Image (cartoon, rainbow, N blue to C red; front, top):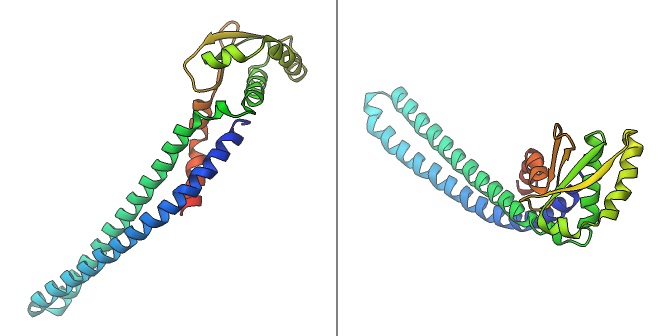
Length: 207
């Protein structure tokens, strides 16, 4: 999706900052993990010695059980720390998504989103729903030019009309004239559709 270029630029900047914080937090978590394991070993040795009288095998089983549980607890804590870092980076991405409409190239991206959406709907009569800011600055002439491009791709006479003012950060929501088809190309919807891939990218970058 075209708008993902802008998301990608924001994401890279956030990940640079998050990467530094992640290394620091993960380092602290690793130290805590070592402390958990060391304390577990001390506790295991202490309890092992206490029950040695009952039999060495039983003491060894207890020792291994305590160490295994400590490792599991440490692993859980590391995973929880990583998940918090990932969620924090994604939340920052969401917050900075609102800045995309302020970029100089945003209107070009918006037109491409409208064009791609209109083609996906198969052309014809299509209403373009926008937020108040985009509704006011999008010229009708720009839509007229897109109509020809959509017609070439769909082989169908196309009329693009401004629809309603909707509560979205940016991008557009398109619906056919008879309202039987709808395509949500708002920034929020595109972000949510891309979220699984974004999570993978964030994880790869941070860890």
